[in-house]
Amino acid sequence: MGVLENLYDKSPIFLQNLMVSVSGYQRNISRYGKAYYEHLIFLEKFDRWSLEDKLEFQRKEMIRFIKYAVENSEFYKQLYKDINIDSLQTINDLKKLPIVDKEILRANIENVVTIPNKKAVEGHTGGTTGKSLVVLFTPEDQMKRMAMLDHFKARVGFEHRKMKRATFNGKHIIPPNQRKNVFWRYNTACKQMIYSSFHLTEENMRYYVESLNKFKPHAIDGFFMSMCDIAGYIERHNIELGFTPVAIFPTSETLTKSGRELLERVFKCKVYDQYASSEGAPFVTECSNQVLHLELASGIFEHFEEDSNEVLVTSFTTHGTPLIRYRIGDAMVLSNDNAACECGIKVPIVKEIQGRRLDFLYSSDGAKINGGNVANLFKNMPNALVRAQTVQEKIDEITVRLEVDKSLYKSHYDDLLRDEFIHKFGPKTKIKIEHVDEIPREKSGKFKLIKNSVNI
Image (cartoon, rainbow, N blue to C red; front, side):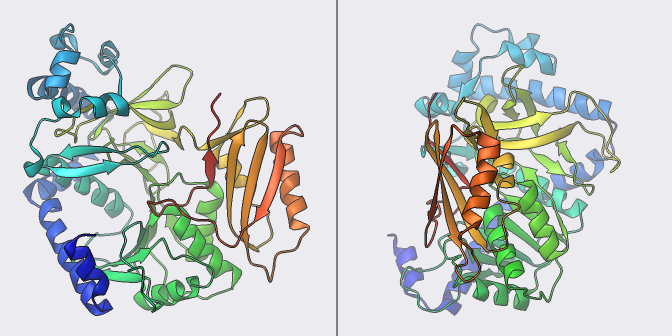
C-alpha cells in the first residue's frame, strides 16, 4: 500500500471527499486543455458534414496515422518494411497490413511506443485472460478522447462538468475497515458522486438509493450491471425516486436488451450505449434515436474475417502506442449499407455491439449462445432474483448461480429457469442451479454474467 492510499484509508470521510476532489482537479488539467476544446468544436462541425466528406477525412487520417507510426515506432517500421506505405490510399488498402494483437504488442512494447512515459497518459487493459497491457497516450490523444465522450453525451442533453452525474465504477474509494454505510465519495471537480461497485449487497443497496435520491443526478454512468443491480432493487421494493435523469450511459460491459428495459423502466429516461476501450479503440455511440453510429473521426473498424463479427480497430487517438489493425477481441455487427439515420447524422450504422469473444456459452453441440440471449433466459423470472451468473467449464454442463431475495423466491422458480435453459441449450446440456449468498465481482469491480473457460 502506498503512502497516499494509507493516508486516505485512515482519513475521515469528509477528508476523503476532499482528496477525491483534488485528484479530480488534477485529472481535469490533463483532460480539458486546448486540444479538448478545439476537438469539441471540430466534432460539432463534423456532425454536419456529408458522409462523403467524413469518409474522405477518415481516409486522410488513416494515411497520416500510418506514416506517423512508421516514422516514430521502431516496431511498425520493421513490421511494414516490405510494404510500400505510399500505396495505402484507401480504407480497403488496410488489408495489405498485418494484424497485431495484445500478445504481439506486449512482447514488443518497448519498440511499439513512440513517447517516453513521463510525457504520456497511461491506459491499462484487462480482459478475459486476466493479462494486462499498459498503453501510452499523448496528452492530445487523451483530450480528444474526452471531447468525443462529452460530445456524445451533449448530443442527448447532458453537459459534462455543468450537470451532476452519478458514477458506478471500480475505483477503490471505500477503506476495508470502514464501518459507516457510506459507499460513495464526491468529486467536486466534475460534480460527480462516485459509487463503489464492490459493496452492492442486498443489505447495502437501500443506502445507495437513499444517496441517489438525495443527490438527484442529471445522469448515471458506469458499470452496466451495477446500475442494473440498483434498478432491480428499486423495482423489487417499489421505491419512489425523487429525480429523473436526463440519460443513463453504461460503460465497460455489454448492454443487454432486458437490462436496458429495466433501467429505462425504473429511472424513466433513455439509456445511450457507447463503445470504446481502455487501450484506445475508436468510438461507437448511440444517437438521440438510440441507433449506434461509427464515429468516423476517431478511427476505423474492420471485420476480422468475412464470416466473423470480430473486429479489428485502427484508432487515430493512439499516437503513444499506435493501434493499427489491432485484434481487440470484441465483436459487433457492422451495417454493409449507408442507410441514413433519422437523427440526421450521416455516418455508417452499427447493428449490434456483441462484446467480448468469450461473452457466450456453448450448447452441447458446440453452438455459441451470445450474451444477449443468455440474459434473456432470466427476463421472465419472477421479481425475486437479485443477481445471476452462468459458469461453463465443460461443453455439456452449465452452472447457474443465483442470488435471490429469500423472502420472495419460491422453490419452483428453479424449475422455470431450468426449463428456459433446456429450451435454449437442449436436453443434452446439464443445468446445475446453485443458490449462493453472494456472487462475487471481479477484481475490477465488474460483475460477469458469463464465465466461460471451455476451449474447443
